[in-house]
Amino acid sequence: MIIMVAGLFGGLQGASAADQPVNLQSLIDQAKPGDTITVPAGAYQGPIQINKTLKLIADQEVLIHGNGDAPILTIQADHVLIAGIHFVDERARDPKEATVLVKGNDNVLKEVTVRTNGTGIQLREASRNLLDGVQIQGLTDARSGSDSVMRGNGIDLWESYSNQIINSSVDNMYDGIYLENSSDNLIRSNVAKNSRYGYHLMFTKNNTIEKNVGFHNVTGAMVMGSEQVKVQHNEFSKQNENVNSQGILLFDVKKTAIQGNEVEGNRVGIYVESSSDNQILNNVLTRNFIGIQMIDASTNELEGNEFVSNVIQAQAESSSDNRVQANYWDDMQGIDRTGSGRSDLAYQINPFYITLTNDVKAFQLFFGSPGMEFLESLFNNPTDSWLKDRSPLMKPPALQGQVEQGVGFSALWLGLVLLVVSLLCIYNWGIARK
Image (cartoon, rainbow, N blue to C red; front, top):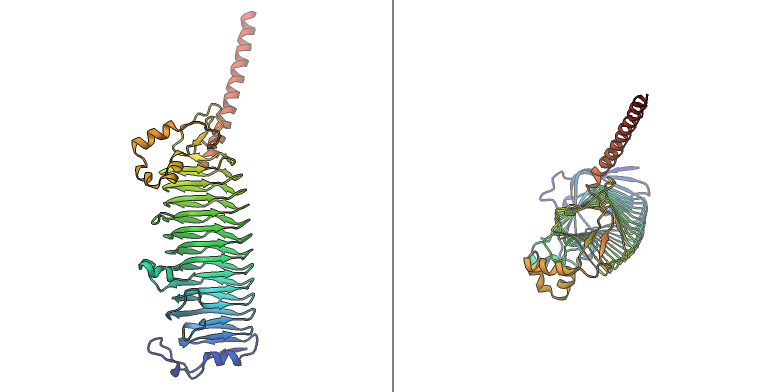
């Protein structure tokens, strides 16, 4: 059954709960499971709770304000649809408390906006929910000094599985999208900016972060204590205003794929520490201060990545047991004697600078100085423990196929020319003998 709330005011300004002839919570309580409630344009007061299967759909602009200590909206049911509703939560509160709290399964929040002083949307032990086109805006200015630590997370999942967060945006929150002890979730085509970590995974398994954008955060994506995560085809840029800024950060991560990402203009493009058995493939790292940094990282695979215009292409410490090959380094001086498109000389990553500055932080001031470069040139033995690309690409991966195709084509023509010359020589030799 479709229920239409009638007789309400149309404007959003100057309205109060007394203006409303029908209380929204009362209307929800009176509805039968499966009903659709169409809410006309207007301003309403929360909190409201939904404990049955319902559809709550806005007719034009519907705004619900916070009132009291509870979340503005709590969903404790399955198969609930919330569409087109705006929530404004200006209450001074614990940043860990949510404006919208979901504790059910198979629910849909579509084209919902949240402006809050707390956490935007929390999922608690909630699975198979869909958040589509959600917009979350923090009301506390991220640049306001100590107040910035009082922000909550934009979208926060705990013990929640197989959810989808797509086509959404988070701005000016503590962490943009945060997952803890939550697995099999899909995070796709979202934007996270002006936060601490744009996308933050803690103790998770088998989550996918793909086709997202993260910029002007402290770190674009932070994955910690997790396994079998896919971080692919994202754009992480301009994480560079903090000494701990990274495009992608892996700490204690295993069996994870970092693939096809564009990582540009960050302090560190990809940072890998205490992590193993991961694949870092086909990423483009440009104009970062450090392209990739590895510490105590082993048995990882780095292949097909493109390092261009980074101040320092790579740094590695205690990270020798990795498979590194077929990456492109724009500062490499290589030799390709066979026309394979790969250099016969390895690209070696000297650990001198990171080792020295880890021991004495003040030496970072001398980065790029003639004295530092001279000392680095002396620090070249032994090299067996250095991180090495044993067969670096001569050209960027996008051009490599053309190179290999050209080599094959040239070889074919060379073979034909040699065959013709040989036949002519045999023919002329035969005539000469006669």
